[in-house]
Length: 91
Image (cartoon, helix red, strand yellow):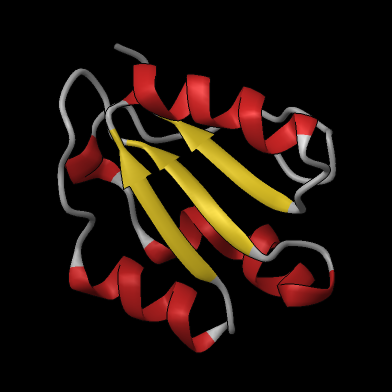
């Protein structure tokens, strides 16, 4: 989800996530999103170095956590008016 617009997302697991999955977010850059919120599935996991570096090079932050936690965090951040992109891997 970017700019309040949901879109289908290819990854089915954290291992499937690649920098290309964030192409739209990276292209939009910090003017649209401050950071990426990534729900990593049933448990928290560390995204690959390539993903972390691609997002960092784009000038964006990255927060990652289990998807259930990310969904709760999403609600809080939206209520605060924060600008961010979110990708959630189904649990």
